[in-house]
Image 1 (cartoon, one colour):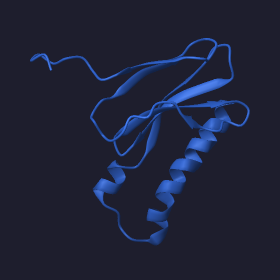
Image 2 (image 1 turned 90 degrees about the vertical axis):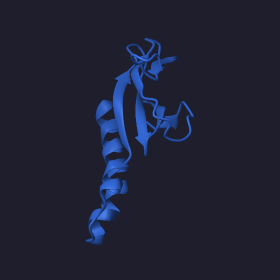
Image 3 (image 1 turned 60 degrees about the vertical axis):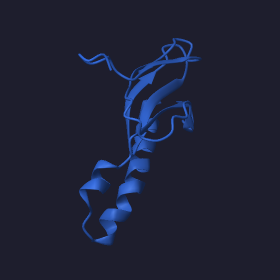
Length: 111
């Protein structure tokens, strides 16, 4: 189950980076730092569902997929790079609810 999802994520990321490598030209630091990437993969304990955070140029959203095909679908729809991290992504045991934190603690100035 997770192997298939990992293969999907590797192929997806590879399809983004492959054109840059195949052209034979250099690439910029901005291109490297803005490459989309998934993180925070988690699964439901009693359901064939996984969820993760996908960061695309700083725009962070949660995605989920179900076995056996693991077709990804976007769960949240935050727009743009607002600097708000998404962390602690968890699925309830039945896989029906995604729980996560968005944002961070306040700093010493209270902002």
